[in-house]
Length: 235
Image (tube, rainbow, N blue to C red; front, side, top):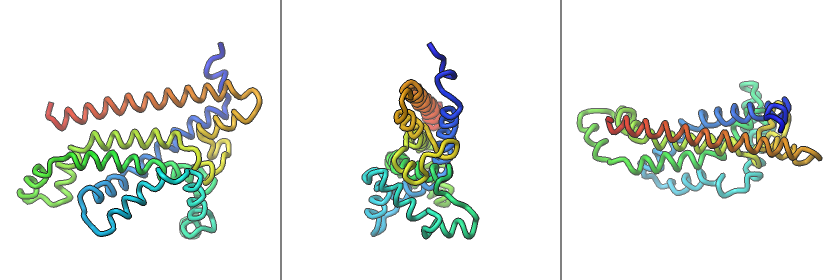
């Protein structure tokens, strides 16, 4: 039986490394915005909250190819955002790994926001009010009371976001294509192997690698969430 290293060539390992890199940066980039949007949706009443909620969850409803096409229109070299990024910062996202990270972050954003929002809605407002009556500012209350209480939810949201980013395919391949070594992630590498005769073994091995990474991420999230819950409970 061939070993994993023998079954997968350098190109496939490159796809594994790129997937981890894309998923990591997609999660890191989405996390601050996810916390802020979840807080607004959970705690701040304003007239357009339903519209914001709909926009946040739109990537879950739209076909991923549509999201990728919209990204191409917006962040392509000639797009309204892409042209500004290129002319001002010299940055191009389309057909780059950074674009894959952007596509993955957008597709994972609804799951991240939902997990954090549920955690926020479960926090007892009395604890925050008690801190506020002692003179703490709203930001300090959030950082010292709310954030520690919702930490398990933030961790769960981050892991969901990472897992979603690892598996993202439709928006990514539409926005950044399937370029080996630059934008070819695990899903697109599996797709590419299945398009050539004799590529089934490598595709199956990559599937097993994907399952292993996903299970490892879930196990790590469980450990981190339990530790955070114990810390909040003072145990």
